[in-house]
Image 1: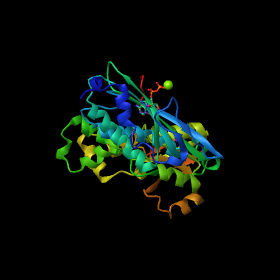
Image 2: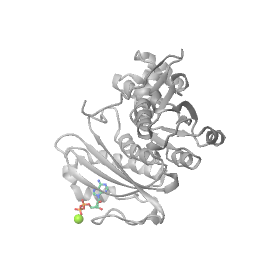
Image 3: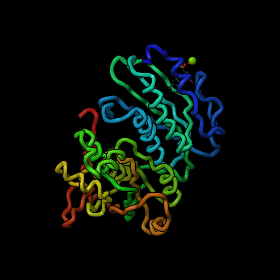
Image 4: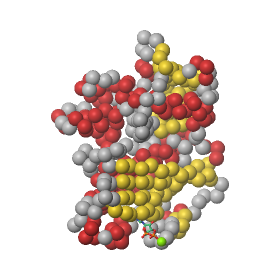
Length: 331
Ligand code: ADP
Ligand code: MG
């Protein structure tokens, strides 16, 4: 059945099952003019939103509806993670072509509901409209953070370490594999492709890092180069990033050769890894390094005086300016 046969209201009825995973924080979810939520006294409120547009952010020939739903929520949870916060609720607005099968939307929401279950997040509302062109999904997440755990980009101080979670570059290379098409023939490809299609936001990790002394944090959505530039500029400091220290998966190192790029290039400029980059004092890192936060931590550089600039140190010791060459929608 297509959406034009089902209609808006029956579709919302289909969607609204299994949307509450943290019942004590919601009085009214889907079904009234507005959701009614309970906040935790003493906590700060976090709000973030991201829009995904067909052919700009995703392609239905390379992503299933379920994967798209999972990722649409995941990229937003990642922004809450990067503030050191706890995500609580999402609202989801979708613009849908009339000829889309109802099953597609059900599957899209199944992906969304899965990640919301994993992270204890409620779906409390949204908006549903028709689109004469492609599919558009806008997700807004509401979260909370204790004031002393809040992670801003502006908190980095000279002498601190620059640290990242996980491995970087996998998602960008996964996208190249998807665009090339025949990735199934390579044994190393499937982990890279899933890093691109269903990224895992580092939500618990963000909270633990904030508790254990990180001073500034960003999620890595536009490539490491862009994210460290954002932290350095906001904190008014310089940085030295050592390219030989950047954590790269063995799969990426093999796959990068196919595209004539280096694995480090994917890590710096590839984007959509949704890992975290943060700064922390060396003595605090000693303690943190003993704690299992569920993902590896790697020191990749240090915070320097602003006058020293934002530098990439190559394996042979030569330095170059690390430019923020992330994706830009209008240029
Ligand atoms: P109104 O006309 O008052 O804006 P709607 O008919 O648009 O309300 O929506 C009815 C209920 O369904 C509201 O609670 C709204 O938040 C929710 N809702 C609508 N579309 C979606 C969606 N795509 N995902 C989740 N909830 C939705
Ligand atoms: Mg109304």
